Image (cartoon, rainbow, N blue to C red; front, side, top):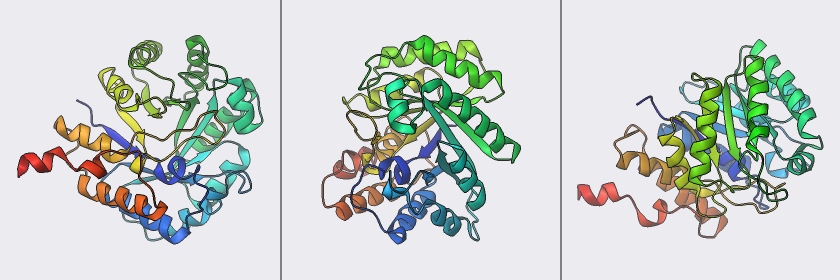
Length: 303
């Protein structure tokens, strides 16, 4: 099997819903520990207006701190939703730009203030500028599997957005289940359709656990040939501009599931479990993740 890519989005998607703003020193510690665990990519933050998402106000400074004398192979990514975000990301040295537009008109307006078609067009322009600047680029279709405001999103709309990305040479594409509406049969069907558009497309998936199907959907994507996955430490997360926000699949839960199958044994699961525990302690509540509470089956088998 092709190597599974783990993209840790906890510092961005995990924290953006939290009202308690985490000090930059603690964020930096959590990010560095994520990097040390052996995951492949860590999403440091998003370049959005600090008044809309106060938790992300220090994203630029975080990148500067993390990139100073960096000797880790882990790629540091940042989320961009508009041209100004791209400018900020280029100024502070983002290594991988994640840019996305929503297949839901309602979510698109709430998230970006733009209709889906306009948001897609502008994201494509920004993505191509990032490519021109020599950066790694991933483009996404948000609300690809459903929307809390609109319900089921027509698959034709999702495929049309993917087709627009492919037409200009953007082949690293993510489908995001922003509202957590996906189910495994739908997941396998939609990813099969994407591979029919281009068999060599680089596909990433991003599932929220709103209805408890996040891990089932990840495993369905894995069966479908998807090799890149976005997850968040401790299961934190959710889009503040969707109707019902819920967390990501926990990174430590996903790594545990992989390692039970003999995959990604190089990732330090115990380090991820420790991080999730510290995140829970910091916020003073139980997190959605499971393995940090139950411990690893692999450890019990070894004993």
